[in-house]
Length: 340
Image (cartoon, rainbow, N blue to C red; front, side, top):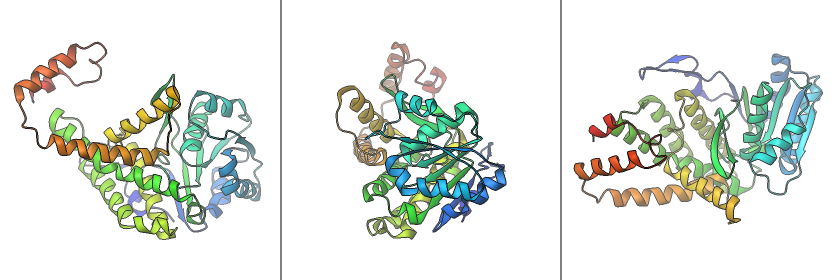
């Protein structure tokens, strides 16, 4: 089953002035993975390169291989043996070193880390990309970027947006509950990201699309309304969260920026990741960290609400930031400052 809200946004000319488009196919619901043979036949895929880890291979990888063969395709498979796989240079490099250069498509079987790695491999190889989700744990299914650690810094790299996203609720509902809560945490972050997007629009004139913002809000409400069901592994709740995550990723692609789905709370999560790499401190699932970041950001905004704005202080601070080494590329122009 496709996501109805996404059908509108196929080469859609929006009042915001942009044309929003996501041409990929989203298949969700019970038994959705059974559509894979059709997907491969329709696209003429005969030799897919499958990327998984030991857990995701057990969850859906074996079935993916079997369904590929049912479609008359002969897949090659790379299974990461890392006990804790992270999206960084060595894991991406290892996947590339196992890449089958006769492959005509890439299939990621997994969620966050596997998806980030697989999208980069597909982009470098310039092949179509399909993701078979194994947990509703993050919002990158439909995005065209990968969140990775490079040279010790967490960055977003341009990568390959999926042509097909498969979310089989029978598989997703069997994921560890904490991974489901991670997906919910990543959705809760949208309370902050949408707010900050609007604030940036009001303060600096940054581009903002009310229609896409409302799309994300609607997906967020659907997730929150179904949150209790995650603990019971209720498939309707799992599907609601999965589809909300897909919509959030698609929203980023629609507008060409990460604003609809990522704000200060994501920076806080990325700091946790970078500290983990540098100092060996504990890290959690991305969405769990985003939930903590969301709570931190909301507390900060509560403090900001009590501050009386001072135009002259703001202008003075802006001039200091403009002239700090390395800051000139991180802030808008002085023309924007004059509007404060």
